[in-house]
Image 1 (cartoon, rainbow, N blue to C red):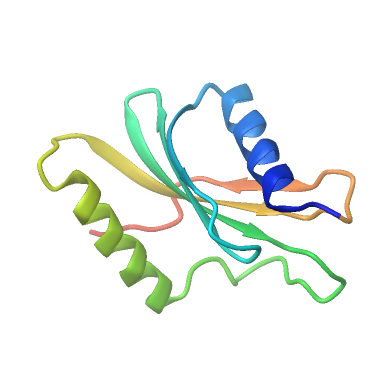
Image 2 (cartoon, rainbow, N blue to C red; image 1 turned 120 degrees about the vertical axis):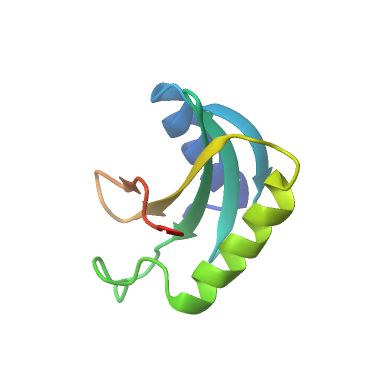
Length: 111
């Protein structure tokens, strides 16, 4: 079973293999964590969710409106005095599957 330490290691290795520069990590609990990283010149806010058990879902559960507002508020706090490009990503981890990471880029638009 993947614990918090393993989850962090999986996400960091995955993102670094894609060329991301990890700026901050906040692995709070087994259900939801956050990573802030640079993907080239784009500041990227990544929501990480652990999907364990048989009853996890695949599609259409990315980020509900409550989570969108929470993420937007955290983003504004982080970049209030910075002028930079940014986006929101989502990583799902499926520890019971062979290909256990799915990465969705640019999942939220604030336009």
